[in-house]
Image (cartoon, rainbow, N blue to C red):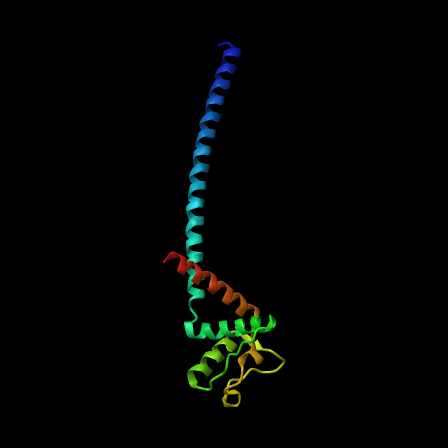
Length: 152
């Protein structure tokens, strides 16, 4: 056989092999890309479920206390009157301790934030303010409640 024919055959077979391998690799990459996209969508869905669980894990009553404290601080900073009075009863006290102990509120001044009979009837806006996580929580919850209202 002629050397030039052998070289031509090897070249043709090599080109076909490269073409087949390229096709197989492209197909595999496409399949993997599709799988990655599906996994990303599943992760996004799971992330959304976790966010909603976190956002709505606080009871509406406890959230209302936090929101009132936040709204009162905003109103006062804008020169508008706002008052949110502490009532010394077991549910109110427990809910305020929940907010304090879980890092949603902190004292306005240095010191300790305590909820007892000595502050019954006093304005909570003067004593407590949201922590950064408390501010973030209210913002996030408002976003989710707004989304829920738009869906209905």
